[in-house]
Length: 303
Length: 163
Image (cartoon, rainbow over the protein chains, first blue to last red):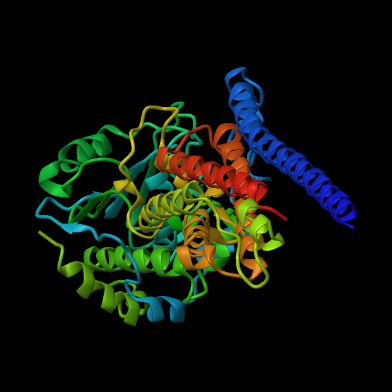
């Protein structure tokens, strides 16, 4: 009897030992697999870095660009329409919106061209802040006159807010009975020379794009009739990141859209400054509720 | 030796009680999560405020602003920084002491699934930085490294756990 019990105990111990051994093997296998998974992840990341260092994928397709816009030079009909026909009710609803800055009122001789108050813009296509500001300026100017066309471009792909989709004033012309507009784009997105300002415009730029008048000199530079100046953008470029021109333009008529609040709000601010130099003309635009609200907003920042 | 004693020595969970995880796993994962939470919270703050104040050098290859303002800074309409913050909020909860003590096996499964999805997103974002944006964001890289470390900890921890 005791011999049978001893045999059973031995068998149980043997089975237990086998189970323990199996458990150890299973554990080793799982740890090996887990370690392998970690090694695979690290290897993939290292392979990406090595491939980059070796120049793989550094061709023309390596930049962040919005599809379908690379070779366009003129804004599509839909974009042109959306930019130039923002409803008055949208401007009235938005007011100054989320305009990040306003022009500064200065004391200087009136800036005129062809007998009318001149709005001078000097920027560059590579500049992401110009890319943002151009939307608001084009919207504002469209309330005073007519563009024959608007260019289509994007900011530099190697700068901050890369490849911001925008309009261009290069090769566009503007007619208005109230004002003259001069839009100078000094370079293209790759910083190759484009437009050169006239000597008069260059003098205006050199004289007023200084700390004394604008605070932080730079582009985009805007002079509205010699009475208001600004350097920098009123529109937050971050809002435009990853958006196509069509998406940005379509958002301009939606008062609830953050893009509309920023672009149309900035357009209202610019409009208010222009209305000041055109002495309230045209009345329909300059007496708009949104323009009135914007006067109050930028009055606080004038010098 | 009783079966229960053997189970306890091998770390196997007794019926209705969770397996006791090693301290290095419990505390290590929590520390990594808290660091990831801090870094992703900073990136989210910068996203929703002025990104121009990002504390990051601009030396060409390293350019946080270029990365955080690129079209790859959003995924499915949501800022990647916010996704990172939500990820680390969730993972911090899943790696907290109460979660490690939870008896529900789904807590461990969701934790592991979270780590795997996090590392997949990291590989995608590293690819985007290197091959699409042409710039590296140091803060993002810190979050990526922490996510891979968290993945390693949790995967090895799960392997060490007895079935």
